[in-house]
Length: 332
Ligand code: SF4
Image (cartoon, rainbow, N blue to C red; front, side, top):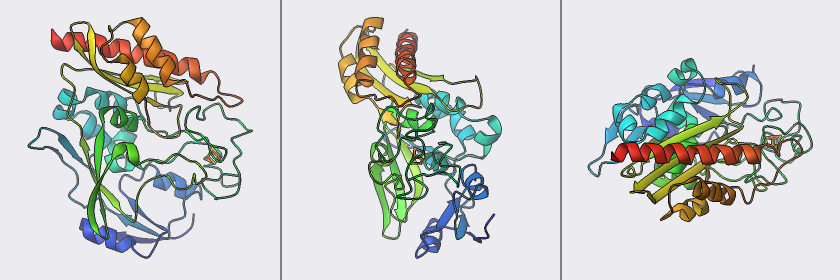
């Protein structure tokens, strides 16, 4: 392991200040991504800035009833927070479908947004990887790409975004508060993660900034929500395909629908056309299957992952069906 400088920040402003002029510095909170990748020689920070002392570990209800989640709230605390369980059960379900309880106890909200891909070539310093080493190539394109993306990929990178929590945030809709050298700004969650295009090494829309909070959009009423994750084993495994769905129902007609996918795309994947197709329809299997077909219309398989397309279709139909059942229960 390479040596690095270490600093502790006692305020958001000082944390941001200490990374200025040092593009190879990295913030650490739970450390569940960074420390792994430093040990693998994939990330090589010159300086690590510990942000655990910052006052960013609360969930607040805002006057307009939205929930504002501090970036240091752990995944466990977030999943079991009573306001999250009441307003956004999809978020709770998605978090609990990810990782192990030990990892969730350490991992933070901000860190989850910053997770790096699990592409094995990215994690192998001897492999060609445009994301880790710009211009070096992509060994996944013609290699073992069973776990890779069928949506949002490019000729430079087809790595899947690994987060379950981010699939829920994509479906719910959220605003991120970022603090940088010029103060605070807000961006939509949907604009935060970038598609790989020709610059797969640029993963986020961050400009020397620290994520300080995630504010969730208001919930649908009445609300049904379901997260379906399909994977090789039942626990502590990343998704082959996952779907997060939210529905509001008026009698048997769908009022509003939200749908996002994980395990199949290069960023948390919101399916807006599929959502629009569901509005006003009867909440039945025919509507859910048609929405799934729309959501996957642009899917392009690689040599080893064509199976992900029917798998994702099943995840979508199941998630929408479960969400509709829960919306009926919520309305009863
Ligand atoms: Fe690297 Fe992306 Fe190719 Fe994986 S898919 S080897 S992360 S460039």
